[in-house]
Image (tube, rainbow, N blue to C red; front, side, top):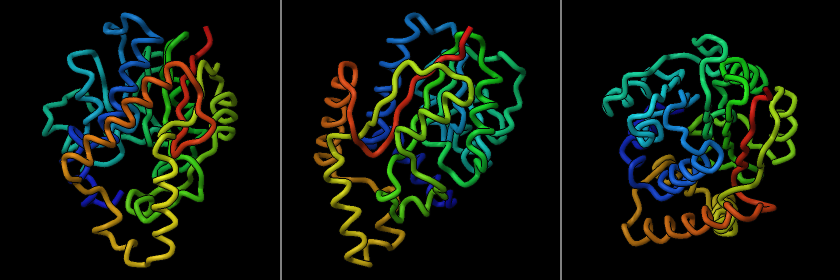
Length: 247
């Protein structure tokens, strides 16, 4: 990821609508599948600047990221259970974690081989452990922001399902996410192609929004979070999968 984007991520991760909705949905998912999971050792594989890791509170949660700049921001959050490494080469013993989450990581160029990363995640998980992964969807949604974060590939639900199964996991739930705002995002991508000025870095990257717009978008995704507890969406700008390592 471009170095300036880490500073933007760190600044926005505690208030930006997309991050807030993702953290809430992850928390609800953990509660739903793990019940009283607070004593479970958890790994955030590709923790970035640590916003998600910090939201897990005082639970035994570890973070790993390949970027020293990302880990520098993690330390500014007073996070200490950190390691610098690729998700394709995790510096942990086998069967170390009961839960592994990887949100928006596997599609990065730095990952290289996503199947190698999934195999490593499988290795460090305990039998019966829970794996939660989220990746951006659909190559036609590729935009300048993908270039700034060094994206390599956006997935379809079928691709994620095949790769997770081939890594040895049993899928509990898989669905598209970020679906209610999908038409708006698609329209924005089309505008980027029509109007070249939209490709400027200062427009394409993460930027703070006016409070009322941020709250409105957050409200839409909070509503979607509740719907996702009951239904599966056939389209969206990301794919969300919950899987388990068989006993």
